[in-house]
Image: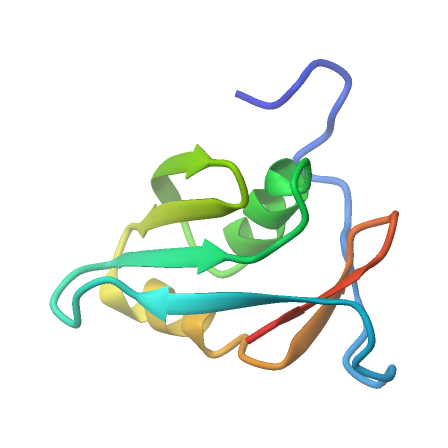
Length: 101
């Protein structure tokens, strides 16, 4: 579940027009026949915000996180593809920007 006091429905700011300074996180498909993706390279401690951002692309059935990487299982391959399409998106995590891609 969400950490106490955190609202999964609160909006996250996406700033695609800003310059691409900050940390780069990568997204990859684990298997083309599976709705699992992997997100890695984001700052330690940002996992909750990364998960919340990726929940906006489909129903997350499961996620597994360790350090600065996370496996995310979507309800369908179409939803996983939407998440993969975030290559190059700049996400404001409050304390800094992370470019997905």
